[in-house]
Length: 269
Image (cartoon, rainbow, N blue to C red; front, side, top):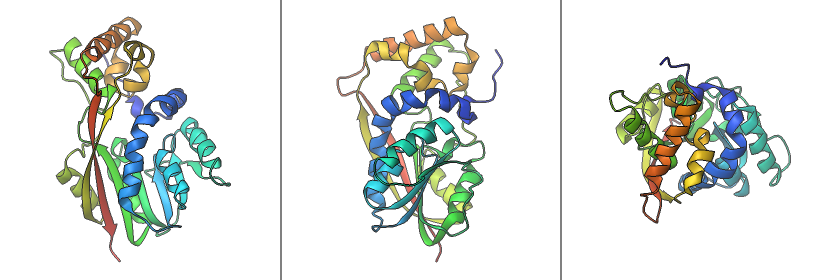
């Protein structure tokens, strides 16, 4: 089976799942965004950039807290959702279609730059880190959240296990160009971008166990970004979702506990 370019790098993929993402995944990942925002403890009115904003969880948290915040994403579908949510809080264009590897903002124009489960998935994550550093003012704060589990979080972990069961002789490929799922790897990325690591927080939440039918109905949302998904035909995808659903039947009542690493770094003054 041949592997295409990862869907994770294709705006059209994220456009196709944006509505379900906002309704399903964001209500779970949004808790991590809220935690990252609170841990940053920025002053009221801070100028904030949210890189790879998705459905705007961090952007919304920042705006509600009085920040002068803007979110960017390469998916027009995600940007439409993020802008709609932002418009309920404040007027003006708060979400823009933009490549996080080439930000269209002046140097030293933000007090803080966040990327919640975004920059680590870029084709060139080093460029994403560097661009976040570039647009920070001296003394500014960079906040990056990544999954500690390289296979993702919540239901995605079950799909990764299903892939291992279905293809026991074949390593499950990851679409990420680099992993940042340890404190050392995350700190190294900050250093490479010219930032000084300042803090590392582990944030744990239990994702509620979805109904069994969820895995059949939302397989593309949970795992469509993976190269494994692109390797399968329709019949195999159906079997794949059924395998994940079988694993879900054995979940504990509290659901799937997933850990995010929230790294923080400063730009030199």
